[in-house]
Amino acid sequence: MFATRVMTLLGRRSIATVLALVALATPLVYEAYMRSVAATFEIRAFSRDLSDPRRLAGFADDVFVGRVEGEGRFYDLDSTVNRTVFPVRVLEVLKGDVPSADILVNQVGGEDQYGNVWRIEGVPMLQPSETYLFATRSSGDDFLGETATPGVGHTLLASDDQRRRLVRRFRDAIQSAIPYDVPNPARSDR
Image (cartoon, rainbow, N blue to C red; front, side, top):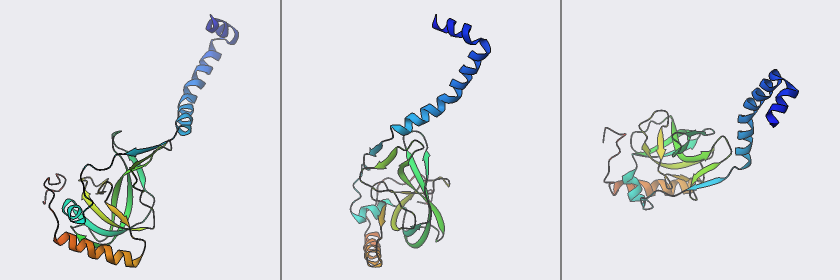
């Protein structure tokens, strides 16, 4: 009854205009709503215990020192695995065949278009201009590059002394690595 009165008062063309405006405004209202309820979501940590550097060295395809060269780009790949891809300059290769050049490293988590933050429990996101020791597995996808092992795949190197100590520790861990019993299907050379 209300709709009939409105149609009579406004006329059919006006109703079409109002409906068109509502249709155009709906995505903007939805996005504004999503931004207003943005939250931080903590993703449970990796199910394997890789806290021992020998286990991590056995799991990783590549171990290297690298510097994050720019801001990451967030990708919602299949609504279950959100990743942020960062450009990284490889400074020193300890294990594997990662090129000594610029590569891509992806990290589980990031900030989506609505301001929601997704991250592994207690693990900070990579930061531009910072240097890290990375332990990665090949994603098998040039678009995503190397995947930082969730939870333990990157360690911020705050000083030259820390870098020297960690590099020495991981060189030893690589020599006495505990092999991971499931091969990486993305790497056919292993």
